[in-house]
Image 1 (cartoon, rainbow, N blue to C red):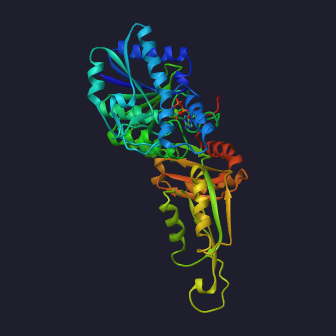
Image 2: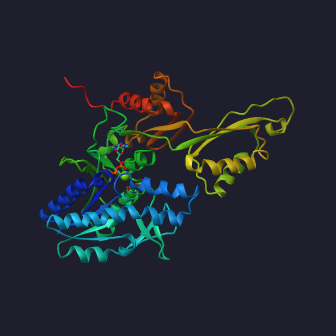
Amino acid sequence: MPLIVQKFGGTSVGTLDRIRGAALRALATQRAGNDVVVIVSAMSGETNRLLKLAHDVVAMPDARELDALAATGEQVSAALMALAIQAAGGRARSFLGHQLKILTDSAFTKARIKAIDASRVTDTVKDGTIVVVAGFQGVDEDGNITTLGRGGSDTSAVAVAAAIGADACEIFTDVDGVYTADPNVCPSARKIERISYEEMLELASLGAKVLQIRSVEVAMKYGVPVHVRSSFSEASGTWVVGEDASFESVVVTGVASDKGEARVMLVGVDDRPGMVAEIFGALADENIGVDMIIQNASVDPGGAEGPAAARGAKTDVTFTVTKTDLPRAKVVMDRIAASVGASGLRYDESVAKVSVVGLGMRSHAGVAARMFRLLAGAGINIQAISTSEIKVSCLVAADRAEDAVRTLHDGFGLGAPARP
Ligand code: ADP
Ligand code: ASP
Ligand code: MG
């Protein structure tokens, strides 16, 4: 019998009526001849509420206790979903992460799944029971409750689908699929029918939170077909699948933006061998990831013979880190500023990274140039740039982010064709 995993996000289980609606959908899928496993998120707003409680008790909560607390959101919705299925005449049993043995590492608040005991799920669905799994949570080797990072129920769903060899993993959310840009920001955004894992991975990592990045990594690794669709309609959504030749004909597939980074600038550092190694080595030692990096051309006073550094040549180094890591990055910068000769440190949290993504960039030149022209045309200043094989990202002022998304989206011709 085909095996379908259905994940319902926060909005899709946000009220008892919506939980009842999701339960009916799972039952309809079962009656259509499938075995069904349901993964639930916490009711919308609940995870934020729980995390705020912890932060109201203490400014820097212990990560283990934070996970023990945050995981309760999904415990509530899993039990309610099982009850709703039973109330509608079906059979259902809920399971928490530790009951299913969703084994993770011990990186509290951002744990990675290491293994899932699939037999518990496959044995339970055999007699027509719908298995309801609390998303977002797992258990480590020592029995501690862990969580998988914000948006982690997507990853629970795809990982369970991979472990039990499901035929598809449906992600029910509050939009009809993956769009060419966030439909809540860009009114002309269009639904994408099919997107490759690779493009979805880039879009997710560049700010399109419709799927958690980790979920796309797992889907790609195990070849799980993912169907992102609306829990409020029957319409087909977006299939996230393996790449085929047709994908490369589209140069730009989507636009994303991310306000989660901050810009750090070291002014007037010594332009000598080993300077950037010292800066980024110190950040790496503290486990602080760096995204965009720019080193300006050196200002060389000239004159004396010998290497530029000996003449006192200076340069500026700019980079971005996540806002969450910024406080720790500041501590590192304060520590090393003197030894790299920096005359100043500047920080800016009012920035956003806007990116265009498309597999076709591999074979089409000129995307970056067109992006810069479009932003210039809208009077949007570019503060930093980074590129990879299938994406170009620009750092802009945060208050121009939405403008930049719409400008790029329509400028690259992604908008819905105008109605006659
Ligand atoms: P859920 O609670 O169901 O997991 P999320 O809020 O995590 O839902 O993700 C859905 C949201 O993702 C949408 O409401 C939309 O604002 C946002 N989003 C960002 N980029 C995109 C995109 N390219 N396509 C669709 N949705 C997007
Ligand atoms: N409830 C968790 C969160 O809000 C996990 C999820 O919804 O995917 O991040
Ligand atoms: Mg989500």
